Length: 167
Image (tube, rainbow, N blue to C red):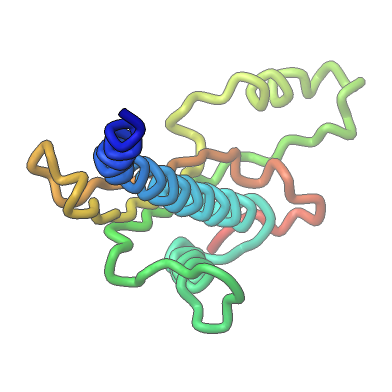
């Protein structure tokens, strides 16, 4: 009777082992996806900071974002240049808001306008990145999916030295 119990434990281990391996593989893969998403969010935030605080053109910001994600000098994980599907930088010139004269009621329309900005006046940065699915997860017939990030900022809102006007 003792021999049967040892054989049963071995048989259970043989059935459970592949499930555990797939579970560990899935957790590691999902962690890599989250890391990639976090890198894209960070790069998008970097782009909106450049819109708000510099006079760089949209093309210059796009190049800087791509460099931020893929440069060979990056310590740690860098993204694959070929998998970056799209980097869009849309800069809108919005009138600077002077928060120093908040007590001046003649300027209240500019302050109210700054608080309630229509979405078409916001500058945006968006990034799309292709992520390949592992063969084992190719159940739905998809071999890749796209991770997208988008962030908006009011151009000139963070600029303290009035350099936000672009040519």
